[in-house]
Length: 135
Image (tube, rainbow, N blue to C red; front, side, top):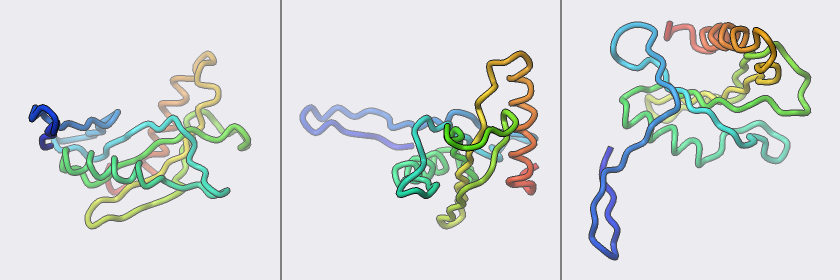
């Protein structure tokens, strides 16, 4: 993506960023980048994507030339449980050609028997419904 220079030593190193997952249903160009977030996404009682997460998503987009980035946050403990893997869009951000989706994903129940399979199936269906033109 670029380089960074340590001022005190003059050492130059490569600057790289990597999302957690690159989704490529068909073809060779990434259709969607997915980055898992492990911190809360509620500020002043509102679901929102933090500015730091927006900047990180834009860096991923620039590095991969992919204009769709999904940031996946776990469902909040106080929310009513849904089927494991259910994802809902809580915010959409557009910066030039780049679209950033804030997703809330139900993770409770993933460790139960069959939970990972249900998570994968529901999450995949949720992604398709969030942005069907990508599939």
